[in-house]
Image 1: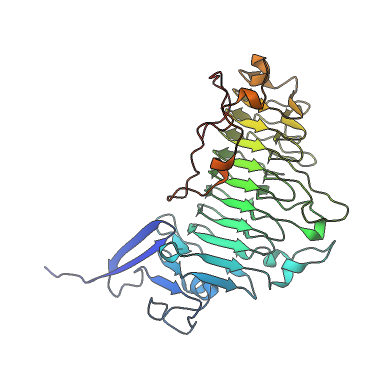
Image 2: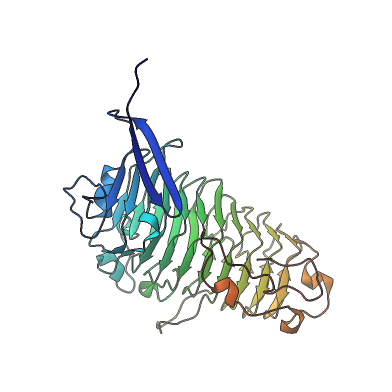
Length: 401
């Protein structure tokens, strides 16, 4: 029997080691493309002879390939544009080589400095601009871009352990016809939009589109100029869980005519707002400039379960839109401007305001967020905070981390 030679491609993408076996010489054989700051785009893209730019590797990648980026800062003069898709069985990987720190810096991109009142051309949105499906992107730090990651018409992607901060629009925006994407363990903070005086730069926006199966899990969204999470005009259900949004909506940049909203979780909106049943569970919103959680005019059958709001300037749980049909169960409001605004069509049971009593700092085991806002675990998951905003009386309300 003839033995077929095999070629092995091995790379580390985030914390995941990807090993691919394929018959040598076959066109479909997977390739690992290595990128380094001292590489050359005419090189073969091996560990010994790496490519210089992420864009060159993206242009070469085919389904099943892996792009492993060596540590360093990649200062862009044009955004990274991803237009080639992988497949469900052969996604394309892009991530940091063996956990090295990779910074993608968009400060030199012209669109990062769009003037007040200007608009960012669609193709220039994002230090990473993506119109492709079936990618696995992890372990990157994206800064100073006109959006960090902008993904439009994207399906079946997994984004994990990414940091998007100090961008000139939203840190991460998914929109258009986009389904079955997973956004896992994202840290997105300090994003602002001087061209709109703070009106639209969110930590994470899944907005202005539709598509089923989109999931946000384990994100931290903080100190963004507008909202932590924004689902404005997204017409299909989104699942958000185990996520924290805090400190959003404050004018840290001294913008004139400040327009930031400052909600932890904005669960819809539009004129008119689509009626859509988003799900928010086991999540925390604290010290935001406006609401902790708001339906923002979305009358759909939203499900809010075991979430906690604390010290938000306005309402902890704002679910009073006319005709709204949300269900709020076992949520906890602690020392918000007011605990809840619940409409006549909203079903609310077992929440702290239903149970009565006093819900303030003294009634919690801890109001110190330090554990939860500290370094992530080695696998990228959120750190443990077993006492943070947990009721002393043992009531089964609110989130647990």
